[in-house]
Length: 228
Image: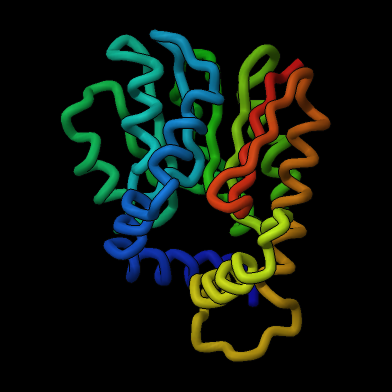
């Protein structure tokens, strides 16, 4: 499958399930607290500019707006039209929150005439062909003294991991387009683990200060880095 075909398939998949995805993104126990923590890890101040790559239906955008205040700027980027429509509805009351359709690996930020102070990407790198390369590009976009924060789901390493990981594996298979496949040459949950490990390791390499946390039964990894 070509990269363009894969991208089109993913857009169709996430567009079709936008409403369900939005419900899961906002109502899953522990996830709202995680989103607030991810926004806080960006270390934003009033008046700052923050970009979210793969903003989806906009669940993180209000938390980011709380951090930058009415004088700051929040930019959410996603490639799926249906989820962006829900993000725009959610943030319509804020004149400093902007939702843009675009690719997280080639963000349409040429017209941003200000420094980007922080970049957030939650549950995104597992969908990218080259997650570590994307992290490099995001770090370059933010520049010295800024912050890049990643939050992603991967298998738990906690002592109670076996049943948690069994559920996680089932969710990954069901949420990986196309969902009609019963057998994979490369198991989706193992492929996802490799991508996330690579992305978070690259952020640690690029950062002068790092915060590492786990959330939601050890399934979600949160890494925040201050760039040197």
